[in-house]
Length: 199
Length: 286
Ligand code: SF4
Ligand code: SF4
View 1: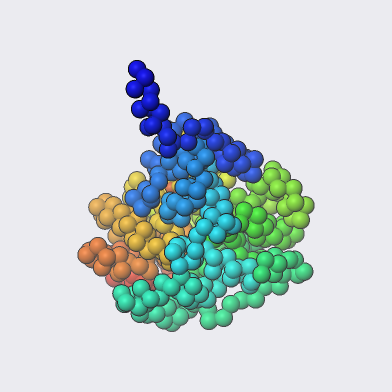
View 2 (view 1 turned 90 degrees about the horizontal axis):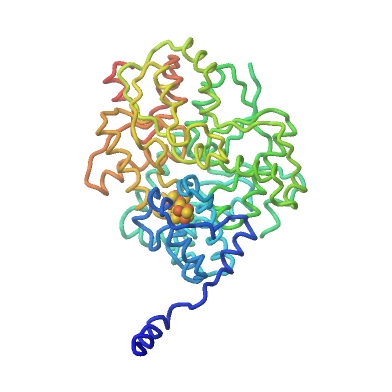
């Protein structure tokens, strides 16, 4: 009896003994998203089109949050693989906005700088898109593509695989077909601070 | 003529200029006078809601307030812009962020429509039907609606978010065959195509295979991200999986113009990467 008890104690050594709701509560406070209502039915995961590329399934991300495993959730591949298709959010029987949770985690990973351009190309793309939008009001596609290739370092791999030339050819096709503007259009932002304050 | 405000969004100034050209003609034939919102800015897209909650609402909020000043309903051809504008509309009307509502006092006196829904109301379909000159017989099309005009329904106000049918009805009205299929609202991977084309290729292959298995000779879409992923990368997807796909991808507005007998539209179709003209020739439509 005693031996069995000691053994079980050892087993639970590296498991957090106390449930830590602080991240789940923080998400509820900040966004009204009721993560703690999850009863692990996995409906979110069953409808998710991108599970094949995820390290944690959507329901597991929710579980990590409920267990207070913030670090694990913020460093997961899943949050950046999510395409925001909103299938999970639409179907959750408990009204949890799972896609919104993914956004929350991405925003937090960005704020805490736990992601970088070079290691995470999806993040690199979001960053250049976002910065271009803040600067000019509207996004200029050729500019964000060029910035993305440089900032992420993706050009090197594309050069080696030959897909860079494919992209250039596609660009020329679009240009010939009036589907690419060489210069961005200008927007008058009338004294509003949007587009200028963050940078 | 009905006046409406057009919120085009950034890609309709670039890669989706072909969508823009086609929808302008279709709308003018249908008596819809599109007035572009002056000084509109980006909706923020996926990038903004992935990085900054407040700015993700602030960008669309500014557009909504500008549009409300003009006083006309807004029509949005891009599914993602539509979704971001609707999301922000709900936040503003529920006053979820008081600082935002204070800066952007949107009252909700105008409506936001996605272009597909706007052009496929029963009245519009009647109007369309009376203008069809060249029924699109021989085209067998699967309608691909994608994610953003449907989900989540509490944001989009979509009536049939799991099984929308308005594009199928349009296809029939234009004289083509609408093929019912199960992937109407599946995801194409959207902007992942830049940084993670590997993901998009897997998702899009699934769509091609199903469409072909059901003997479709074309796919019709209402979103320029869906169009880009299905059309622009078709040869790369073929190569990636060792297949030889050739399935043209049409905007629904292009089909309207074709059925109305608009000659300009035929020329413009060659601006797609997958040239639809051979298929149209096979069907005897050109
Ligand atoms: S669908 Fe909702 S309740 Fe079910 S596992 Fe996912 S988050 Fe939890
Ligand atoms: S929003 Fe993200 S997590 Fe949810 S179903 Fe879509 S890809 Fe999966």
